[in-house]
Image (tube, rainbow, N blue to C red; front, side, top):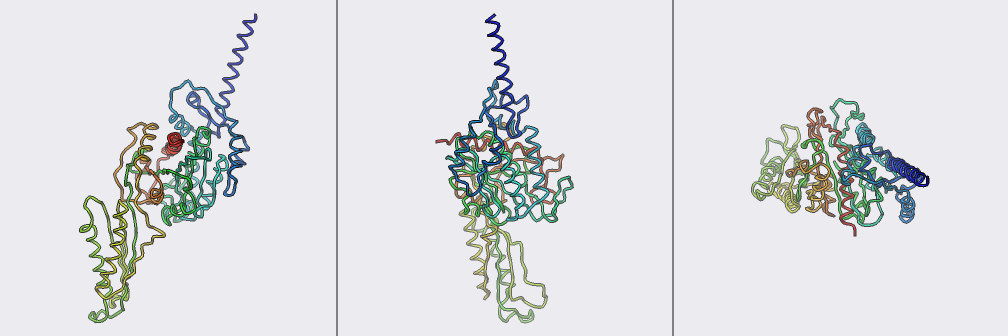
Length: 484
């Protein structure tokens, strides 16, 4: 009889433990795993309602108070036993692909897409991000660079690793007819920054649920004004990289199939600069060209001379571009104007070549103007649209490659060629080790084939959960590998 009672009690205890474990594993910010995921989903963080409403740290919150609260909240952590040999990477991916999570990430992206905002005008986008961070229970600082946000998840102690998303849209009228088309005339998310924000918020949700696993601090940077205004530079000036030792970022690409990751070590994106030169002399009648000076001739000579900067001064193995794209001498057909204006762009993959081109462009224009007795002033817009080359650190790039292979398999990582496009992520890469990578959104059946800055640009949203998982795993694994 005693043995029968003992046996019955044992079965009751086992049943109670199983039910409790199942409940605990499903109370995670709406990230409850499906029945097929239960075996591989461990150590979820159970957040109390107070952690969502009161653990958010605004700009002036005391760090000690936050750390004390985090330690208190960390008592509500449950571990579910796993009978699966699936890796932690697979666990993160399964969290990202949970149907409720996918629905949430897509909804975020669509809300931002419908109401695009230009550089330094991302007020509602920033508000939406902060609202979601509040709901998740993530502390943050605001504002940086007017509308930017620096959020953090983890111990509050080193090491610190950052992941960045840009927020701004473009002054383009959307031509894609779909349910969530831009509702703001003349503005569109034509470069995928809405997707970048959604993926990083998805990563924030995953990382918060796994906060007890983090061996350091993940910094989430939501940055304004990538397209114009050097938002990254202003974020750095406002302290976005404080204590951070490495940074990563992704960009959607219609050059790669959906969810395929692409990058390369070393120079990835060209440095990009613009110039506008004003050549001045004295206005004169076209019937008397031998008098005073000829600004049209001086400007024309400058254009011709600029063409030799790459063909005769650059190493042919070092890709560079100088293009004059604008020339304006007025519209009076009977008068040689007092001033002529020319402008264009220059690009290069190394910092030395990039800044040498800038110097030579100014020298050529000023000296050619002087030959024809004119004066010249050259503006390079260095405070607005001046991007150094984006150079991937070798070790950080390898880290991205390893994570991509772990999540998607090595066949879904590709070494991409260098591109003449530019990114202000380059400012971060000049300060600390960095890696920038692409995530494919190309889907011919959906029509997701048009390049960025096209009014027909669209993405395959199936890449969104993969991007969230990439961000989360890149950050979590970095902290594990660099914990001191």
